[in-house]
Image (cartoon, rainbow, N blue to C red; front, side, top):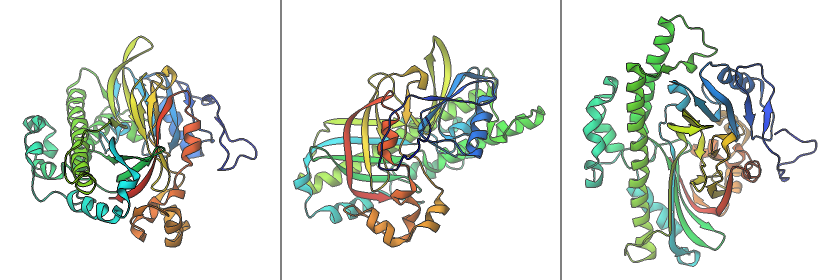
Length: 407
């Protein structure tokens, strides 16, 4: 997909993917409606030049610069995997539930709901002061002693961070759909333990590449080969980190749900009408084009036929619950959000507090300089991003936040 003459932010166009014209081993297919910059193009070429890439690289409509690989990349590989392609927030993803509540029940309660959520879910670098039984009883703790030796001093921290949000673009939201039904949604990953696990294995991969005298187009494309101890160790730790991230979201969602039930149902438990929990920074074994491959989704959601996923906009825009169409050219994937249109530093230079207040009007959220880098205008227009992937997913629900908590 490419820019069209006269296209503005308010116009939405729909086109099929476009093969990028790159000199590389594998083709690159892009669902984005914009040309890649020079650095982004080189990054795509670097990925596509690796000998173990299977068939082609798929770029989602929210694609933008990352570290080593583009955020919004789907990379299928044979007999190898790159730990830096998954990245340091192993298992980062989204969780959402549709509640039986409606908009009228929220009237006059948003500030109190936000305050109570912030009281029970730690954000930023914070962790829980006490550890609840559902966390302590997770079977994954039994495998901790088998994780990389570089994280063996972090078990207590990992225990206390289970059920915490983190910082950056991680968030918790109370939303309304187009029928005024209340949804709860959050975005988080594997916290410090996932970060440290990833760094340990990335360093090992780079060290092995250096020992072998391997010439890589980017050091962050260092990889492990199957049937080696290093590959097996990374794959084990990756699966553990992904499960930690999934449970982390479930623990937070249970607390979030309880807060909302306290305000809207007198504390009585309710049954969600729909629940979705999906990764967008992860890798798994899948079958594509009749062959088993390793699929790394760096800022992308699995969208096999009838898979449910979540594509959030910025903190002042719409978000979408989607169902996959199983498009094999995208390796059955879709975007993981709107995608940044500019860096955090650029956003801080370009916008001020008045801009933030104006762009988050009607949302109960922080309106201070600490979240200026998350201002909605720092992200791509979510409507255009969605229009670019009508062949990948169908929209099940359209959400708009009324409460937003940032890490």
